[in-house]
Length: 413
Image 1: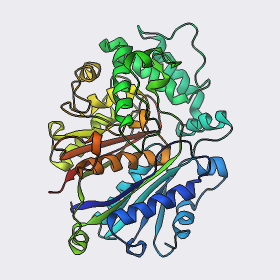
Image 2 (image 1 turned 180 degrees about the vertical axis):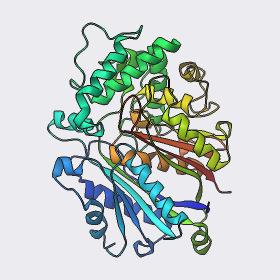
Image 3 (image 1 turned 45 degrees about the horizontal axis):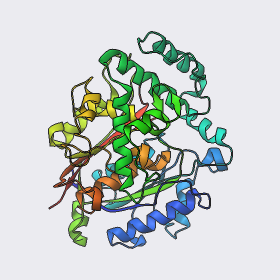
């Protein structure tokens, strides 16, 4: 493997940006990212652009990235459009990394931009269903519900039908949470501990959509989304953009970059057709990432995990090997995942607090980790941060994500 580095990052504050567009947000963070790297736009040799819903909301398909880059005068570089559900942005970075590994380019930019808020709330929530197999949608939901019917922890009698007033993914996460509760004794309060920690971290992050702290009790009493998930445990609908610039070791030496972060591993994987007790996608490709990086879970100082709900983080702590399977709730209770703990998780606030504009979220994770590894995170800085992991899942087929990307990064002294 060729040593590859991140030399620039850019990100806007996630939220409801009524007066912004996918194009305008993307162009803003591209310029911020190029400036952060100390480069000029003419230095960029390739672009990878992630977006999921622009075509659905504004009928802009096919040439999304070309429109964004051309509008900045960057019309001489090859552009690849990436659509990979919630893992689109991290996939864009993986492709940029792959191009550098192959020796095709020396410096490339990966960008993610998404605008999900619109006047028609049902349209926003309904868009998430396109990240499942649409032609088999009813059967997939029925299968998930049948799994739920066989659990000891069941839905309350007054539960509304799947997808009613919420993303259908909340029903999927809730079923998996009830499975975990039924099998391992995990509690709703432990999920609230995960979420309360993330809202605290988000309160310290000026780029976060939500900057209000929430206590465990407040989260437990918040409006129910679908049991056991309350509103505070779930990622909000929002807009945003993020970007990173990657380069080869030779290019880094050429420019003399002093704030570079090394990419130790970049792994992209697809979910498999398994049952609830089979090997999880995160476990499977996590092993590949650790092998590529020549590291173990014990080496990871901090991580950004895909917490579309609090259960997502709890589960991925287990899948990434940070705690034994079944012990994610106890791990959260121990304080290990909070700032000041043994391994802080989602110091950005995670998807629950920082926000989750689908096509940008994966690079927002990278933005946070690069900021931490540069020791520039201010009040949320993890002491002596050296090795960091980002896990970004996307879509759903069967009982797990359709796609996942894992990156491991290292501070360069």
